[in-house]
Every structure is written in C-alpha cells, then in structure tokens.
Image (cartoon, rainbow, N blue to C red; front, side):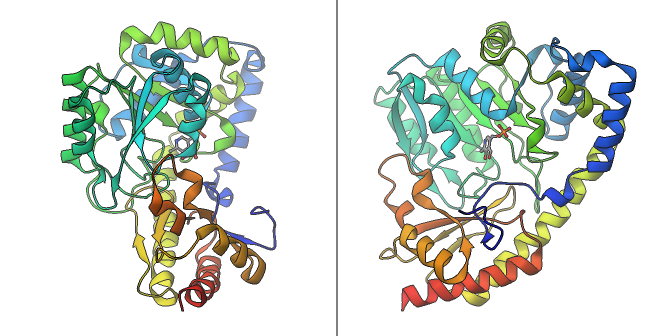
Amino acid sequence: MLGRPDITSFALGQPAPELFPVEAFIKASREVLASNPGALSYNLPLKSLKAHIVQLMAMRGVVCNESQIVVTTGAQQAMAIVSSLLLNRGQQLLVEEIIYEGIQLAVRPNEPEILTVPTDLETGMDTEEVEWLLRKGSNPAFIYAIGDGHNPLGVTLSYEKREHLVRLAQRYGVPILEDDVYGLLHYEGKPVSPMRAMDERMVFYAGSFSKILAPGLRIGWLVAPEETVPLLSSLKYGNDIDTSTFSQQVTCAYLASGGFPEHVKLLCEEYRIRRDAMATSIAEHFPDCVRVVVPSNGMFMWLELPTHLDALELLRFAIEAERVGFMPGVAFAVTGAERASHSIRLSFPNCPAPQIREGIARLGRIVKASCS
Ligand SMILES: Cc1ncc(COP(=O)(O)O)c(C=O)c1O
C-alpha cells in the first residue's frame, strides 16, 4: 500500500531512482558484454572488484587488503553468513532494542536468545549497558552495531562509544558485526571512522553498493578477520553460488571509469537538501512536543511523538486522510522498546524537496490533530 503512486511515501529505505547513474551503467554494460561474454557465466568473485572495494574502504578510513574481503549478494547476505559462522542455535546475540529489521530476519533461523540494550538518540548504543551484560556473564555470539546513519534511529555512534565497544569485544572475546551501509552518505561534521579501523581481529565489517550506487546490483561485501574468509566464502557459495558475475563486472567497469567519488558527492549534496527540507518542514508543521533526530548520515529521520499516540493508528489516518506514509517504530522493535509504539521513521532520499515539504505539511496536520 505504501508503494501506491497516489501516496507520498516516506516509508521505504529506497535511494532516489532518478539519481542512479543510468547512462554510465549502460556504457559499462556495453563494454563488458562486448569484451567478455563470460560475464554471463558462473564465475569466481572478481579480484578487480575487490581491489576497488579496498580503495572504497580507504575512503572510509579503513586499511584492508583483498584477502580480507568476501563479496556478497548485498549486505543482507553478509549478515546471514556471519550469523551462520558465529551463531549456534539458541545462542545469545546482542543488539539494540530498536534496530534494522533485516538483522532480526538474518539471525532468525538460528533462533537466538536476543539480548537488547537501549540507544541514546545523541550518542548511540548504550555501551555501558553492553559492558554490564558482559560483566554479569552474558556470552553473545556477536554484537550487531550500526555506526553511521542508524536504521531506523538516524543517530551516529560516538567515537568514544566505538572505542568502548571495541575494547569490550577484545576483553570478552565477543566479535562485532559492524553494519556500515550508510557510512559514505555523510552530510556534515567530520566523519567518524568505522570500528573496523580500530580492530581487524574482532570486527566483521559489512558494506554495500545498495545505497551509494543502486540496490538492484545486489552487491555487498564483508571485510572480515582474514582466517574466517575461506569459511565465509564457502557459506556464501552454499547459499547462492555467486554474486551475479554480470553485476560484478559492470560495477567494476563503472568504478574503473572514475566517476564514483563524484557520484557519492552528488548523492550527499542532494540528500542533504532533502534532509534539510524535511527537518525545516517538521519544525514548521509539527507540534513542539515531537522529538526529532536529524541525522548527519544515512537516509532516516526518527520522530518520537507524545507517549499517548499510537504510531500504527496514526499511519492508518495518515494514509486515509492525507495519503502520506511512513514506517511505524514498532516495525523495528525487538523487545521492551516501549518508545517504539509512539515513534515513526521517515526516509528522506526518495522524494524531491518540494514533495517532501508538501507531504510533511500534510502529515503535520494529522499529528497536530492527534495531539490536541
Ligand atoms: C542497516 C542496513 N543494513 C543492511 C541493509 C541491506 O542492504 P543490502 O541491500 O546491501 O542487502 C539495509 C537495507 O536497507 C540496511 O538498512
């Protein structure tokens, strides 16, 4: 329903389709097919793509080499194979109490006991609480953390907390799965390096081209502790044999053309405009009692409404009366996240600024009416 054309939807984590580098991909596809029909075969992971990923990781402040990289079918598969590697059936897993639903789905086959910690909306995951859980004997298979552009909370994990989490991982021997699919979508301030830059033994880093090129490519990657790469590669192989060779080759040809850094710059400029349009319109049209997290990275704005409001009910009104959609916070709640029931996630990259302003004005009417 949220994909209906008559609805202004702030629901989905879709990048702006009009900014996909279509012409460059048409050119890259032609080049690949003309020079190498084997691009349509099964193949080994492309070494030249790994070399580009090493360069891209350097843009994130992470030094790594090709033998630490596993190319995956999106970051989603990266999460699934790390879970297969680290998580035994029924074992504990540590996540934030409001978190990307994809990790919850990736671990579900192993039926873990999920431990949760709260998140501070300014500094990120409560690492003191992580320490308390570990000190009192919890033994999670891994800790899942999003450093930048948290989905759905928008918050950036502070440098101090990254250091603290890495120290805890080292002291208690609990690996971290660091999800950094939004790391390069950065809008202001000095970027903070991922935790992988602090430790290459305990941190499994998941990256993706989905948000910075196009999700339809289905290319992600892991930068993993080197000794785990053979096992992760065979888990990946058992899962889907290959990440589309054609997609890898075309992406590689595109990256070799040199346009990627400019493309990321363009995305950041345009998404910053959309983010600002959303934040300004919220300030104008929403009542003061709504708390807003304006992110410096990523795609999402998190809004906490007065506690008596039910975000699911609000969604129904918003669609029926004003044809505006969003994700209710409960979609991301693991356990005990009471605040999720009166919160909403808005995605800003997917609509141009004028449509954002109009949609937020309409949504503001619904929120105001519900608050009064
Ligand atoms: C935090 C987070 N991690 C991973 C993914 C999945 O990315 P991919 O398309 O690379 O599988 C998403 C997609 O929305 C996401 O928001």
